Image 1 (cartoon, rainbow, N blue to C red):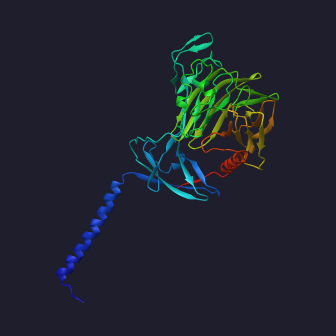
Image 2: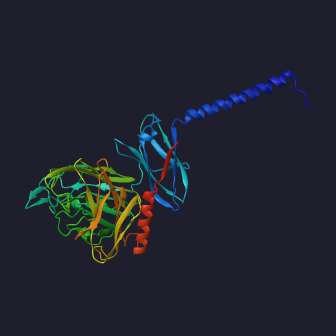
Image 3: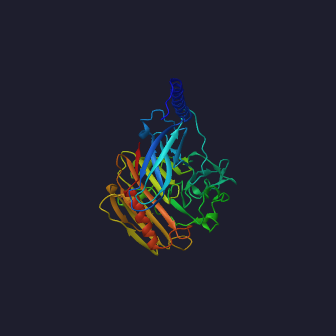
Length: 424
C-alpha cells in the first residue's frame, strides 16, 4: 500500500473539506431557491368503488398551524402535476379541487404557497352560474321591454316583478356543470327547473339570449345543446323550497324582499345565494338564506338552507308525473333518497330525478296530489339536502331505470362514506 506524505495528506483533507463545503452551499442555495412552502394533504377513498371528479374541500381553518399560509398565492400539485383549484367562500373559506380515485386508493397532494404576493390562475371552467336581467327596460303592459340582458352579480328583485314579465333571462338564475343545468323562477313561484344537455360543455351563457318577450322561449324546443326537459307548474319542481303548514305545502310565494347573488362562478364550483326576507306562512314571517351549488363533473345540486329561529320545517321534493316509477330508500341511518324515473321529460323520453336527505332530519315523507315530498327539521337553523337529474339524451348518460338505480345507489354510498382528508 502506497504511503502518503504529510503534504499529500493535507491536500486530500483539504479536498474533502472543499467537497463537504460545496455540498453544504448547494443544499443551502437549493433551499433558498425553493422560496415557496409546502403542505401535504392525504386523501383516502375508503370505498370499494372508483370515484370520478370527487370534490375535495379543505377548510382554511384546518391549515391554522401554517400561520403564514397565503390563500392568494397557492397551487395544488399531485405527482408534480398542477391540479386546478378554487377558493370557496369568505367567512369559512376553503380550498376546492377534484380528483379521480381507484377503489380504496389513497393519494398525496401538495399545496405549495408563497407567504406574500398573489398568483394569477386561469383554469378551464367546468361549472358556471349566472343571473341575467334587463338593465334599461321600460315596464309597459306588464312586461319589461328591452332587446337584451345584462349579467349581474347581485340583484334586489323589484317588487313589481312577476312570472313571464320578461325581466330575467330564462326567468331567474341558472347554474350548471358539464352534465346538467338548473334554474329557478325568481318570482312568486320560486320553483326549480332542469336544463337537459346533449353536450358535455357549459351552455347557459348562450341559452335564452334572444328570448326577450317571455313568449315561445327557444329552450322549450330541442336545441343543439339540449332543452328545458321538465314540467314544473304549481309543483315543487325539483328540490324547490317550501314549508308544511296546516297539512299543506307552501312554496316561497309571499315575501317582503328577495336578494339574489352569484357567489361562485367556477371553475370547479358554481353557486347561487338567495335571501328571502319576511316569507309569510300563515300569520308568521320567516327569513331564509338558500345556497344552491354544483361541482365539476357532477349532476348534483347541493342545497343549504339557513333558517330563522321560528322555522319549524323546510319541505322539499319533486313533481309527480305519469308513466314513472317512484323509488325510495329506507336505510337505518345516514343519507336517504326519494326518486322518480320514467317518461317525464318534456321531450317525451326518460328522465330520472332524485332527492337526497339525511334521515336524522326527516320529519315526514309522503305525497300529495302533485308532489312527492320530505319535510326536514332544521338543526341549529340549518337544513341540507341535494338533488339531481339524469336525462336519457345526456351524453354518456343514464339510459335505463336499472342504470338510474345503480347511479343513485352509488351516490348515496358516496354521501355516507365521504373522503378521508388529513392535513399533515
